[in-house]
Length: 242
Image (tube, rainbow, N blue to C red; front, side):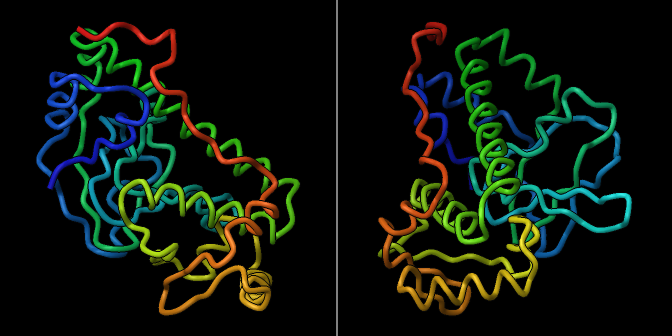
C-alpha cells in the first residue's frame, strides 16, 4: 500500500524523480484501528503524516472540555503540517475507520526543498488548497444556514472522493455519525437530523447504511454558498523540474 499521488498530479505533470521521492518520503506504513488517536494535541512535534488509506479526523479540545472536529481527512492528505511551526502539536488525529499513515520526519521533508525544489513548491500548493478548504469552512460556519453548510460539505466530499475512485453512481460511503457531522459543521445533532431529513424529502439525496447518493447535484450546487475550488495546473511561478 503506497501513498496516493493524485493531488500532486492535479497540480503538475510529475517527473519520475518527483514521484519516487513522494513514494519514499514516509516511514513504513502503520495501520491504525478504528477509534485510535495516534496523535494527541499538545505532544512534542517531530514530523507529520502522509494519509494512505481510511478516514481520519483532526480535532481540538476547548477549554470547557468539549471536542471540536476541525477536518475530515481522506487518502492523499498530509496530516499535521501546521505543526512545523509549533513546539507542540496543534490537534489530535483519530482514525474513524481502520486507517493507514506513514510518518515523515521534518528533517527528511526539508531536504525535498533542497533536492527537488519544484516538488517542494507543489507541497506549498497542496497546503494552500487545504488552507482554502478551511477558509471556506470558516465562511460557511459563520454565515451560512444549516442547509447551505450541508450542501457544501456533501459536494466537497463528492469531489474529493471521486478523485480517488470512491464514488460510484453519484453515491459514496460516509462513516461519520450525525453527531460528528454536526460537530464538524457547527450544527446541533437535532438540527443535523432535521436538515438531512429535509434533503431526503426534497429528493436531493438518498441515504442507506452510511451511504449517501446525490440525486440532484445541480440543486445542491444552487444551495451551496461557495463555488467548487479547482487548482490551477502548473502555475506560471512553479520552478522548473530538475
